[in-house]
Length: 545
Image (cartoon, rainbow, N blue to C red; front, side, top):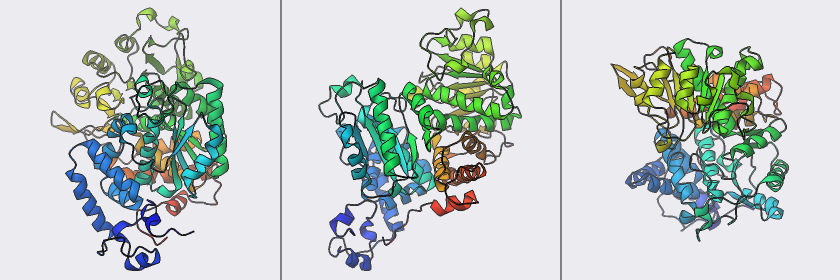
C-alpha cells in the first residue's frame, strides 16, 4: 500500500520535505502540509549546511545531522557526500564515541535499527521483520557492544556503531540506505555504570557468555540468512575471543566480514604496502612487532601473514617474522591464557638469551630490531622517543603505525615520530593527523581508517552476490589502493587521503568484484566487475517512488 500524507513525511526513505513537487504533493495527499515554496535538493543542502555551521560543538553537530538522517536519507547523504572529510569525524569516529556513551540519555529515534534481546529469543524473527519494514535488506552491520572502539563495553548503546558504519557504506561506496539494517544483539553488559543508570535502555544484567551466547548468535545468523537472501553480514566490535570464534565459524559458509579482524588488517596491510613502495623494500624482509595483541592487533597480523604466504613464504617461515607484545610483554608459547588468534604467532623462550626480561615494548624493540611497529594497545604515548629512536637506528625506513583511537589513546603523535626519526619514519595513524613540516619537507600522514576499504569491499561483494569473502578478494582490496598515492613525491603518505573516499571506494569495489568473478564465487551473472558495481550503486537524488 502506497504511503501518503503524514506517513510519507515520517518515512526517511521516502520523505523529500520541501522538495516535493506540486504534482507529487497532489499524488501523495500532501497539499497544505508543507510551505508552498518548492526547493531543489541543492537548495536544501545549502540550507542544512548553514544550520550545521551554527552548531558550536562536535556533539551538537552530530545530533543535528542525525536529525536530518532520521527524517530524510537522500538529503543527509547528499550533504555528507559533499563534505566527506569534514563530516567523517562528526558522523563517525571520534565523535560517535561520545554519543555511544550517552545514547540512552540522548535517545529520540531508534534509527530503523533492530534491537534483539537474548532474554526474548522467540521475538527475533518478528523484530527483524518489523525493523526491515518490507525493505529488501542486503547489508547488516551487527554488534553486541562488548568492545566499542577504544571505549569498551557499552551494551545496547553500541547500536550507534552499527548505524555509523552503515552511513559510511552509503556515503563512501553508494550502498542503497534503504537496503541496510543496523542490529544490536543485547546480551547484557558488564559496565557497572550502565547497570546502575536508571535511564539505561538495554538489558540490566551481566553479559551472557558460553553456549547460550553462541546459540543466540547462531539463531541470529540463521534468521537473517532466511529472511534476507543474498545478505552481506558485517560483524562489528565484538569481544576479541567471540569475534574470532564467530568469524571462523561462518566465514567459509556465508558472505560475512568482521571489520575489527579483517577490516583493520586490510587497511594496515594496504598502508604497509604503500610504505614499502616508498622505501623500495619487500614485505618478506620485514620484522613486525604487534603492540596490543587483541582482536585488532592479531587480525592485522593474520592479514599480513596471509600476504606473506601469497608472496611465496611457507607458513613456518612467515610466522617467524612476527612478535606479539601485550600486557605481559612478549608472548611466548608458555604464556598463560593465550587466545586462539595469538597462539600461532608466539615465540619460544629458547630464541632469546634474556627471554625473562622481555616484559615491555622497549626491551622487545631492543632485542628484535623491528622494521614495522603497529600499535593497537590503547596505551597513550606508549611509543616513546627512546623506543622510536632505538628502532630507527636499526632500519633505514621504520614503518610506525600508532593506530589506537580516539585521540587520547594514541600510542604516539605523527609529528613526534617524524622528528624523532629525522624524517625517516613512514607513518600512518588511527586518527586524522595534520601534515608535518620537517626540514623543508611536508610529510603527509595517512590515516589507517577502515572506512578507506570496507565500504568498497562490501559493495564489490554485493554487486556480484559473492558466495563468500575469500582471502584473495581481501588481498586484492588492499593492493587496489596502491597507485592512488604518488610514492615518488617527498613526504608522500602511505595511504590515500580520506577526502577521496568515494573515488577509491569504487576502485576497491571493482577489484573485489572482478576477483570474485575470476574465482567463480559470483552468483550474479556478470563478466565484468566494474559493470556489476555501477549497476548496484545508489546516488542521493529524489525519485518519484
